[in-house]
Length: 380
Ligand SMILES: Nc1nc2c(ncn2[C@@H]2O[C@H](COP(=O)(O)OP(=O)(O)OP(=O)(O)O)[C@@H](O)[C@H]2O)c(=O)[nH]1
Ligand SMILES: [Mg+2]
Image (tube, rainbow, N blue to C red; front, top):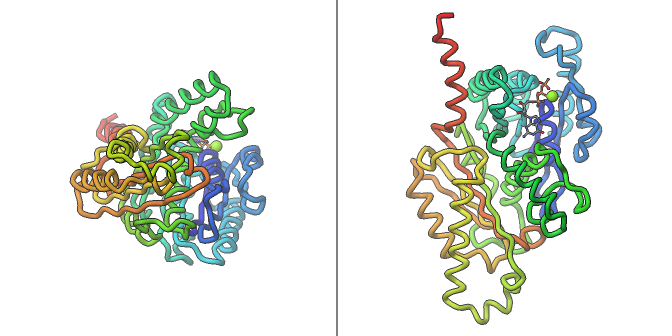
């Protein structure tokens, strides 16, 4: 999939940068172009995967007064960047931002600009602030969510409250067992010697893995999938589908199961059952635990299942069981699925990715929304 990413603010820029990081798996049919817009020059400077021309400094005060000369000036710059990056065409645009932040205020304006010249769907990937960030931020996030939901083709929700806790746990474990195996297992950013201790880095990496896996699914691969999932199908799952969540669970393979060639010869019923069980277990983990924001399967109208890993480990039996489970559980009839048999990183892991869209409720979003509903009904 060819994706044009626009990172807004600190969170958005850092997330865009993480998604733009080249992976071993990407081929020519995947193209990511990323632009970052922030009011903090240091943040822009620290981005390593977005080229210099893609970094735009936007003075903070300008947002409150769109008539200021600087606003026009910078917006024109963003506009020019968008045009130059889109010369080759994209399948979709993804705006990334922290919901409680300041630069998300640019979204309505930018969506207008994008829709002037592009017909492709425009999505947002947003982070919900953690409870500890205070009422004001939570309320801001709620009203921003209301505003952007109405004008976008879909909003992918990532709950910082949920993921920062997980990240801190992972960092602690990684520091305790400072060896390469651990670093690989958790896919922490940085080299094995240098473990990142910024929980946001870990969260951003989690976000990036989900997006990267999804956009690479539709591309031409060395090993052809048994069930192909193309870009159009991925977009059909999420376009016009309001709130979206993405779950991803993976498991490292031990050396024995990596020797698939020998294994096939002596494949036993027990082993076949184990592989099927692993797929089911990972799917449950992706939905119930490692989901971008907690939600009920039954509140989704559409879903997409993607299996990734070495071909021989992608159990068809497990896949069919997961398909049936998700199909029976969602509140709709549109379920798409595919597999992505690969080498490289996923050669050492089996992963199950599940996208849920058309969600009529994400409890944490409703909780935040309640904060501003209460405020409005309060006569004070
Ligand atoms: N996942 C993730 N969330 C972040 C990150 N940095 C900040 N956040 C979250 O995003 C929200 C918005 O913060 P910023 O992105 O700094 O906001 P901004 O748009 O830059 O605007 P300012 O308030 O002017 O800095 C915060 O409330 C945090 O919850 C990050 O690197 N990753
Ligand atoms: Mg900031």
